[in-house]
Length: 294
Image (cartoon, rainbow, N blue to C red; front, side):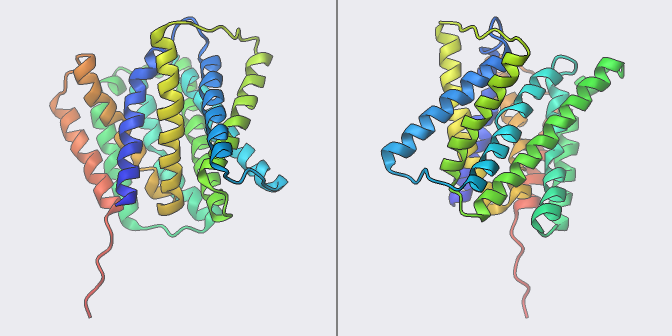
């Protein structure tokens, strides 16, 4: 039951962040907004750990792996998503990110020795087909120009880094680093790393004092980062990186459901069938094997 609740929280919250991110786009550079988002999340998490008396003393090796988690999962990959969407549509990025399931299966097997189950691969296949069906209009409209190929390459690199981040989180859990503290330090290191890159690139650290910007920043920091990432990375520790990553497939489905209410998104037959394939792929991959009768 705990895993189901964490699964639902991850999917629903990340599905809703697509709307919140729109209020972050505008006069503030996306890279700087990422710095603000994870900087606020890291500060709140570290304060929570301090007030609760949670252990904040870790070895240098542990800090290095938490810094690696931050670089892979809480900074560069987010920036690359923004860059990719300058050249390709968000639908294509969603299709790319659905491939993280296969990457996690392969990387989990290679780095952590995680067993590969046939139903997981089958479920991933169904899910990706479903995602493709949902975003078929955007895929058909894709122009295979140099800019398009560049956008796809950047998007693929972002997914690959995120997958390595998932595996790093699984490794940290195996070495008894609690998820809350790992996220607190990881987001802190990711913020520092992202801020350093922003300074090197000459980004302006502007800020918009408005209810939409500040409200969406708070939502993305608390719900999208602290709560959703806490739930997701806890799932990785409990289910493994490959199974937990199936949440990524359901995120765009939830986002489109919300978009139909708030932005007038119109569902077609292909999108509806794709949604059922995504959900079916999740059930297939996460279903427990029945014990064989003797």
